[in-house]
Length: 352
Image (cartoon, rainbow, N blue to C red):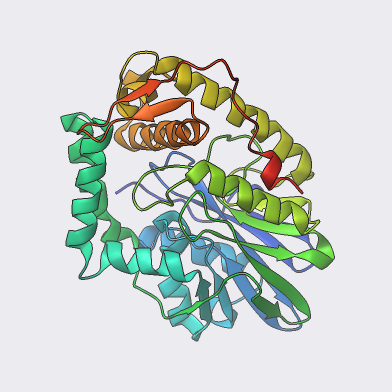
């Protein structure tokens, strides 16, 4: 197992403002390298947004980072989980075990977490297999996907007791109030937590300073990931909060400006998949040919799965715009449609 260093560099534990700490915990081998958790304190109360993997080495590093703020893990009364992925939920059960704190996540992602780790894993495995068949994945990546699913249990400390929350719910940490905003797109039940008074968005994997595409059609997912993502973005913009605290990378300001940049990226990606489907092709082949910094041959299994989920999400978006059609065969073949009408800007219905 890769070694996780204890707290060392100052950027691993950073006080962003009074009562708000960024805790960066390494995730050896993960594509992003680390997770950003956020510790919120006020009036003797404490909450943590997102937890890293629940493996012993990662938990040890995470505990060091909490302790470096002068807060005991047993003092954490709320564990706010943005989504079910194990790099955000893995140690939630451990942190709850320390002091009995309440774990908050969406009902939809809680159901997914149970399905991926509990007695229903067989049903999830069948869904994953159907998806791999439909996108036309190769044998090596199929094997990787099932190995990845089997490894999930090792990265989840334990299934926590959960209070399911959604739009209209709030979490109070001393005198601080965080509003729950449902933001499906990256996962079916992704949540953001918004502190309107300070203009903060605890964004999980919804939006980043540098990474771009984040709506994926990979099980489990919503039927129209890109459209769902943009409805979610409109809800966040409507809160008026502009400072984003993401699950990976650096915090940033001006959510509205970043949303405009991502809107342009969406249009370019949709046009790209339409162009790549000039002849009947699979989502896997579209993903292989899409522009990216690394060559396809340099991507590991997880990166190829993510790229295929992104390609399928944009193919579904193009289908809804009348720009491609998909067969019902296995694997599913996508073909661009001859049309004299350019892509419609269906983002308008989601803007605020």
